[in-house]
Image (cartoon, rainbow, N blue to C red; front, side, top):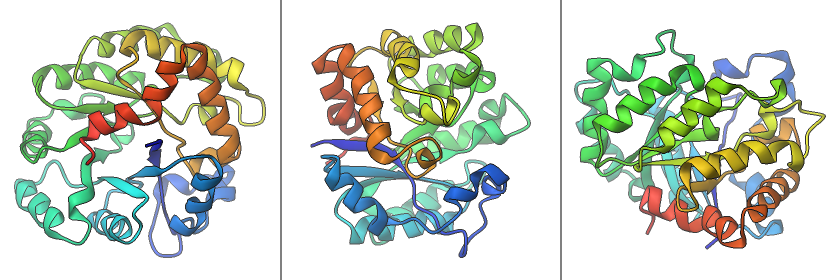
Length: 280
């Protein structure tokens, strides 16, 4: 099974997406749902996808679970739930019991938008993560280099848990990279319970001036740090449309991965996502 390990759905007419207010995001500020994605997956040889949270709202998680229930190609949902809520365990039980609840595979919060770079290490957040892992769910790190030390400490604090690093922690590709990102990616790669998504990279480059060759050093560094068994392909559709079409994004990442070996490409396009999220 070929899996897109990271994509989104949204409708700005029905809900508020604060991060989408920037003028340069106008091209994607429109309703984009499963009917829009399905033909793109078919055209690009993708069998299934994992939909990932876009806003901090339980209603969105519930919507995504319903979508997954109604659309078999959505094999997993990484939703949002309030990690600081003392009743998080009950909330997760309720989500699991709802239509599509069997496809809840992980939880995510937009940590890089928190003022505190150590937000993950707060006592109430760590308590919430305990509840997440008690429900056999993964946790997606949405962080940049600034928050990676806290992410590393969190992965070390829960050695039996499963973590997924989204977008390879958003390397500053447009600026040519940084030692801070490179060194901290290497440090979190040492944690054997963390997988890394090679996703969202084109939108970290100059949107109208990138290609596979420019992405390759960052993909290669992630591969060096995480190994062939912990890389996951993700399109980051429809955010990726800011930089290129679904086919262009998929083709560029596939070209990068296959340079590292056909087995690296094959695992990143399905096997590793199944392991990280324990997909049926």
